[in-house]
Image (tube, one colour):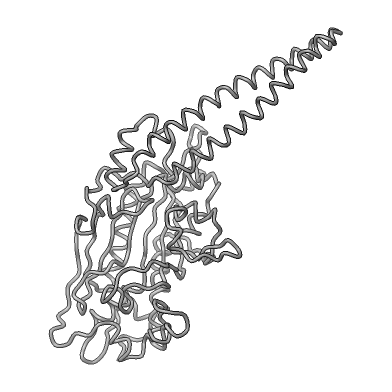
Length: 423
């Protein structure tokens, strides 16, 4: 959530940033400023009335001490009227604050200055690339065919049990899935991230804290009877661990990692874009989250990008890193790097990770703060990234490491999988 002072002090910057994010309802900015002015005026009037009541109450005490009861009673009647007016002002103030909050939460985060202008994925900037593309000229099978050949994933069984987009991993496919999760978690904890095992459902306050509500309400599965939401990513419960907490400055940065299944209702497109593991409604992902000092957040962002990049390198996959343009960024992000892996069988790039800096957009909602050396509290900055999302990683591992004799397992993954190949 954007801090209110930005609208008063940097209105043009707010409008420019919203335009860069391709946000259409710019009239909201003037509405927010207008409601805030009303709120501030009522606050001044309320403070003035409170001071008047306080002064009058002291005067009543003095008159009673001097035996001037009749005059004291007159002042009591005035104070009583003033208190009724004060109640009305408090009610009006609460109404204005609720209206102001409702307007502000509709606005996305402002993009960092380095975010390129653009509206579509084609306008994202390629930052760098790495890895080598395998030569599959002798044979080329997509992961859904390989999964069937080696009995790794049963898509039809998932459709029978639940519906489309809920694959069932079987045998060595299930073992490979478990191996990837364990490897990713160990890789993160060895880099200093503390592991969490969070709930897979969260309440409305938690979903609001990280910006899923109200922006992505239609994309989440909702358990209406209890008011819970199935998480779209472990970022949601893990970041909320520190909601309403003041962190000691010496304890920054806070580094957390977690595995969870993720649930997303988003429909997507048709054909090869959603076939197999390309787009599913339930998938596994290992997440990394950091809460950091505001002055360090962009240096930390680059460190997190390097962390994910080296993980991809260890899997022997060709990848590229993109800096997202304003129109392709998420609602909450100030700067996002996407990682894509090349699917040699499908001959296309597949997104496998996003690493983002949210600055204080999330922490302002959750009131996650630290106390600086002067004793004042400030909002920390929050960052997160996929390290990694499994479906498309699994797809590319199967496709890019296929050979006539089977599927090779990367060396880093072999101790977790227990073999060097699927044959």
